[in-house]
Image (cartoon, rainbow, N blue to C red; front, side, top):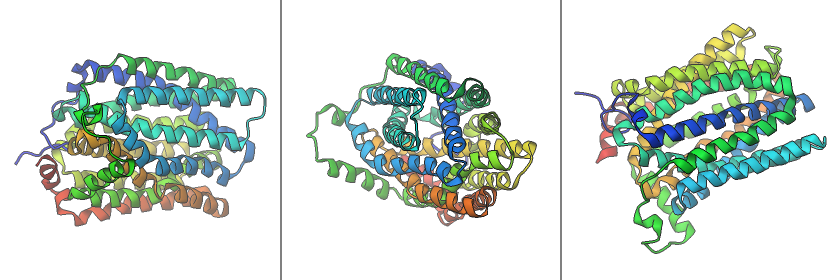
Length: 422
């Protein structure tokens, strides 16, 4: 029997979405903005570590981001389903630009401390929870179902190719021009994303989002999202896997920059190269998504890619040489992108359009639920025994979490895809 892709329909060519003008415009705008984001992320983590030389303070930066995801995810999803998705994403870009400009102004006056940095990260991460559900909803509206797996993979692949240069060059830019100038560069990059969103045309939302149906109470609408997730047979095991994997993934994300600074004895330029290696691997993972989705069931793809990603991060945690670190980060980037693209395509094709925001908001909250505690625990343990061993343990935990999915026959065969299309 011919296999279906993770979106529930026979996947077309990886390149088919490039025939869609709206997709190409969205792709271009978001990727131009990613240059500023890469510079911003490196500048911020370098500023915190240079100012404190504290593993814990650096880990708190990641914990704050994930805390915002947990708190804002489900709430943001309700508003995404109420509001125009394109305008919501544009509003978030404007808010982020203003926050970054405030940080730059404080840095210019030499009064930028940890408190405003953490506050800015919390605000930006919270409003970004509007972008994630809105983006997935937009993708499901501008692309036909048979192009979702390829579109998600292509989006991540192009983003990774762009990110490879952005991360590698971004670290050098931070080292060359300093953190203040880097913040101004990031603020300007949001203009590209705003312009692209202004240009795309999205089919009208269902009548429920245009006021044809009576507006329900907020908590009733939020409950609808939870019920949609619980009603689908394969969503609960997927969410349990996501929750468990994040327990290891939170420490991995928080401690990776510290491992670069401590074990590889690098600075922002080295961090940029290491992260560039991960996004270079993501190029291959994104391009391979459509093929993998045709060849493997969703469960097999998630278990296999999740295991490779976790073991790669584990190897990174024990590495003290740059070439080995770059090699395993390429493998981690490949597996993570292929896994996430198939996962997103499955949900995009399985969730009703009017519930897309709430469902993806809940996904984000579940993914981030253990993230803050994991990041903080990683920071505390890393301060005591070193960041590398803790990161390695987190990677092994991440790899083992895929065993949860083995108990679901629907996910390990094609039945999950068939149920999504019933």
